Length: 154
Image (cartoon, rainbow, N blue to C red; front, side):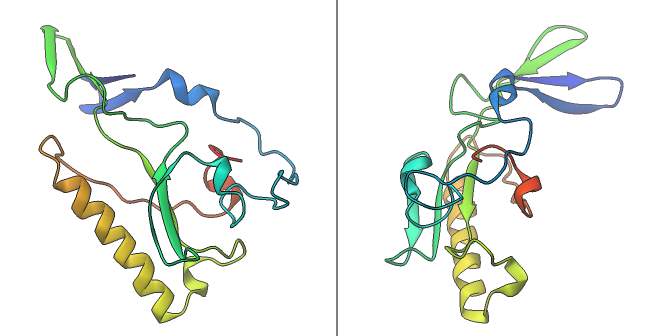
């Protein structure tokens, strides 16, 4: 993985060879060994990376590292310049997934106020913990929607 400066568009881009190993096509729903159709559903927790945390028992919200991260805690967060036009660094950081509900068919807008509060508490937990690390400069929270939103753990 490498973070590179794009001088033409004046922005940073992440080059991540490992992400090309993600499934490229959306596979038909298949039954998993746990009997569910989704690696994010209850009973399929063994199909995800080790859990970093959860709210509730049984879980209402859980989080873990992405199987195909765009950033990792390897190398250094320092930016380097070897010449005038080659500025680069490591995409140093963490890439986590927050599963907002154990109900595969619910979307954020389907949740009750209490369920939304639980999701927001999880997001606040993750953002606060990540910002507490010395090398963290920014944290981005983004929401995938549906199967087409993310193909990493199908």
